[in-house]
Structure formats: structure tokens, C-alpha cells
Length: 138
Image (cartoon, rainbow, N blue to C red):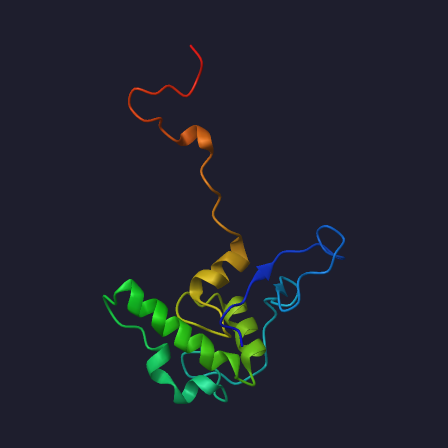
């Protein structure tokens, strides 16, 4: 099942010379090559995908609470987990840069991270010290 996909960016042979953990996807596994499969008229869902009969899990709702959106995404990922066209669907979503929904077992945010990388954490120098405390020696 793809619900817990962990993506590990590796260099050939692994970043530290070891292979990635079992079950972990690498960027090489999740490439953005286009597929030749048939997609719906909007071009974002495969005609022979398991999602065709699970519309409720894939339907976006305006002003949906965050908890409900996460639950819906997890349900959609579970559907993708058993889908026979999950990998071609994922490749298509990455190549077409589909900006919404779960496609190929990945959320839009997960696909974004694969395509552009994670957002950098702010440097500790950006953090403001609490009032009355100084972060540097005087």
C-alpha cells in the first residue's frame, strides 16, 4: 500500500553507499516520464484506475476542514495502493504537474516536494530571542 510512502533522494548506489530502506521510494522510482495510458477528459485521472469507482475519496470540497481533508487523502491513498495503474498515474501527475488531489498514491504536496524539493528550514539566526534574553555575548 502507498499510504505511507517515504521518498528518499539517493545518488546512484545510495547516498551513503547503502541501498535505501526496504519499501522506500527513490526519485529514480518516482520519475516524471509521461505515460501513454488513457486519462479522463480533464487529463488527470486514468480511465482504468481504481479511483474511477471511488469518487468520494478524490472529490475536493470547498472550505474543507484540514482534518477532513487529511482523512479524505488517506482514503484516496488507500484506493491508489491497490490500483493496477498507480505508477503510470503517478508518472503522469508528476509530468503534467497536476496541482491538486491524490494521484498515483501521492498528495499534491508530496508531488511538489518530489519536483522542487522540500522547503528549507529557516536558519536559527532568523529566530528572535525572547524578551530580556540576548542570543549573543555582549
